[in-house]
Length: 150
Image (cartoon, rainbow, N blue to C red; front, side, top):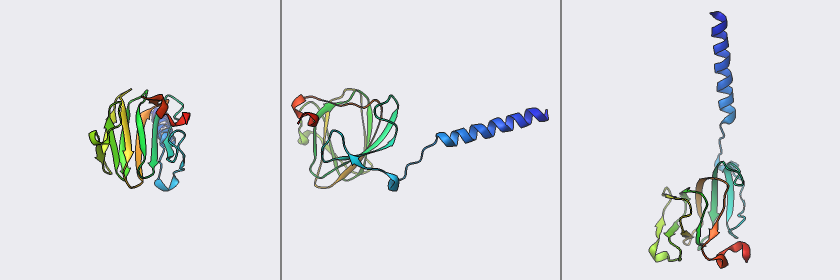
C-alpha cells in the first residue's frame, strides 16, 4: 500500500511539473515588435504560437494613425480585441467606413472563416490582439489592394 501511495505521489508531482512547463506567460514589457510582413507601417508581436503552423496563435498588431486595410478574408475564424486606440471595423467586399463601426479599447469582435471585412484606425495609434488557429493567411477581395504586390 505504501508503494502505491509513493507511486501516486510521484505521478502527481510529475504531472504538475509538466503542466507548469506547458504554461506560457507573456508580459507587455516582454513583447518583441517587428515590422508586419504584409501591412507596411504596422508592427506585430507574436505572443503565442507560430503563424505558419496549425496551432493556436495569439498576436498583437500595432497600427499607425489613419491606417486602412482593404477588404479581405482569412482562411480561419478570428477573435479580435481592441487593446488601445480606436479601431474601425466594417463587413463586406467594398471599403465604406460609413457602414462600419468604431470600436474602443475592450471591444471584441469575432469573424467566421472567409468572411469579407475591412478595418481602419482613426487619428491615433491602435493596438489589437488577434486569436486564431493557424496557419495564417489573408486574401484581398481585389488583388490590386494586396500590399505584397506593390
